[in-house]
Length: 118
Image (cartoon, rainbow, N blue to C red; front, side, top):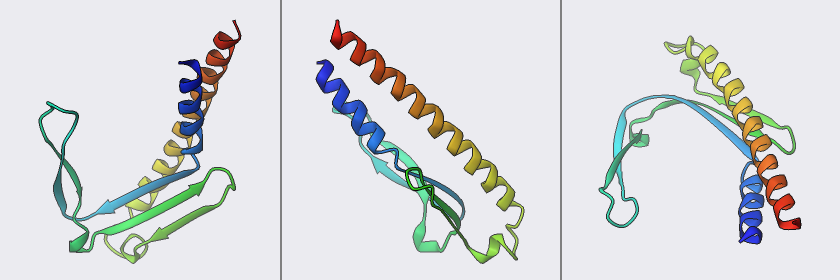
């Protein structure tokens, strides 16, 4: 059991390679997504990409330190300029959340290792 938990923790760490932050303005559509057996179907909101949403996308490679941000021109010269600052704040929040998650996973892995050595 401890070995399985260690493997799952290591997999979680490997999945924390890229942080993606998206700020978008556009029409919303609701996608059906079923849960576990017996759960009622949920309708989850998402952007309707067929209706040309305006997007800022930031990708941060946490291993390499590379940061890439792509802006739709509306966020630079158009009606959504005020959302650039909002997006920057979300980038900072997202990075802080990832740092806290990594620290928590590290503590959990240390705890599992300590218990398996007993």
